[in-house]
Length: 33
Image (cartoon, rainbow, N blue to C red; front, top):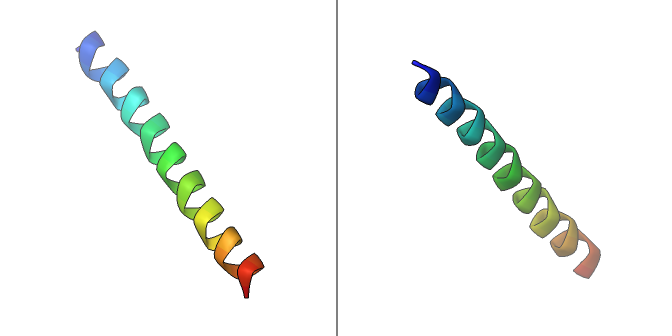
């Protein structure tokens, strides 16, 4: 169960990082136009 909880936290962190990356690309695209 502990491993599962740690995995959940790691997954949420990865998810947050992915969103940040997407926002960065969208920002750069908007900046280009």
